[in-house]
Image 1 (cartoon, rainbow, N blue to C red):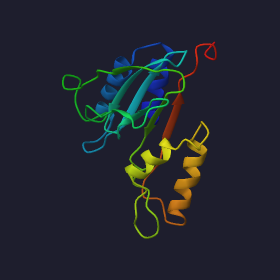
Image 2 (cartoon, rainbow, N blue to C red; image 1 turned 60 degrees about the vertical axis):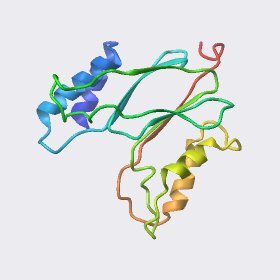
Image 3 (cartoon, one colour; image 1 turned 90 degrees about the vertical axis):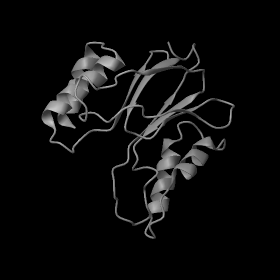
Image 4 (cartoon, rainbow, N blue to C red; image 1 turned 90 degrees about the horizontal axis):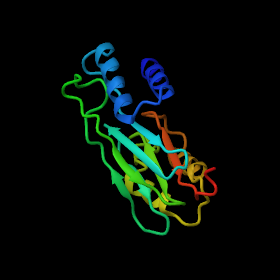
Length: 177
């Protein structure tokens, strides 16, 4: 995490592209990590107005795009190996570009979220996660309610994996200034 965060911050500060950042992260981790170790990641470059995004997904569950007023999700699947697995010649750094409308939501999360187990070994599950995020009775941001629901599900069960989740809402153009 430390080498990745320092590389990420330096590259982002220079204004480099998602592809450049992912490529440099991969190069650094490929040099540093022992064989069998890697870093799954999603790298998102979000325009200042939150209306366009470039997304690179290496080894994580699909990034979910919930379009305002529409059921279901668009998915940006992982299309490449995690960081640190492939050398620079084999690395796939291409990002997926999306356009967002006001009220659209983007979710990126680690596999620890759907795999969070309760004391009986029942996982929270991808279906439950996606159904929860589709609920219209929840205010945006939905993450506080999601965190509460997952904590209620796992109750006192020990954590088996880390859980990270990000929610990004596209703003109306007037709100983006």
